[in-house]
Image 1 (cartoon, one colour):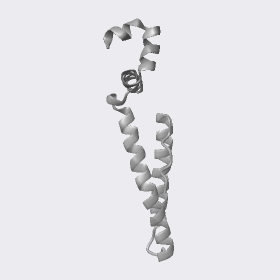
Image 2 (cartoon, rainbow, N blue to C red):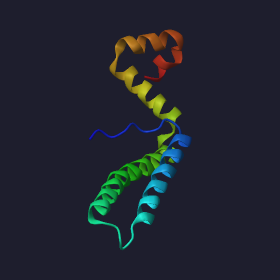
Image 3 (cartoon, helix red, strand yellow):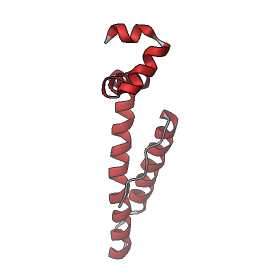
Image 4 (tube, rainbow, N blue to C red):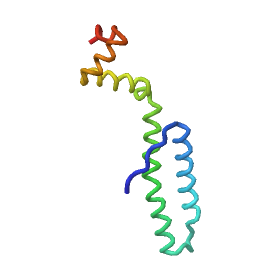
Length: 104
């Protein structure tokens, strides 16, 4: 099973996380002593599929919130790596910002 793509915004993460938490709570609230084995297995299957996805979303949300994963910083780092590995891109950057060539 291919994991679903992560949301692109923190608001998207919060909505997905809330949805999965509510789903898990609703399913667990429906379990009673009278729940049949087939129905119980179906409910557990749904929770079993939702729980890892919830954990992945919470982890990704936490990582995005950390200062080390600042999007602007990540973009600068990626561009710096491209400049080091791709001579044509380095020349393009130096053409528009001569200071870049002096920092290399």
